[in-house]
Image 1 (cartoon, helix red, strand yellow):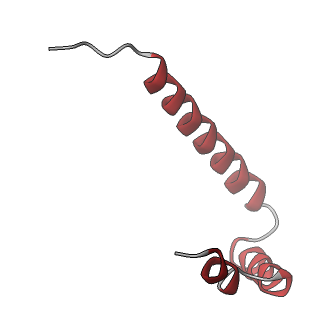
Image 2 (cartoon, helix red, strand yellow):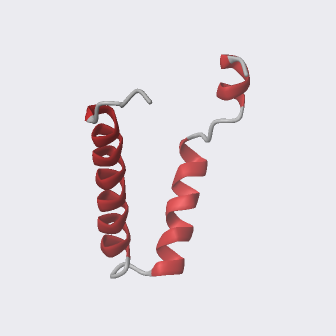
Length: 61
């Protein structure tokens, strides 16, 4: 995939705003902080897991 293809299908600022408004309407203002907190924890666990995988030495069998 070329850079031109990626840029052609990337969302613009108006699309991002519309997505955020839809998320706000679906989940409400009180639920969004919980969703973002869970997303942040998931990303942190994923990064920790990838670092942990890099640090462990591999055994030759």
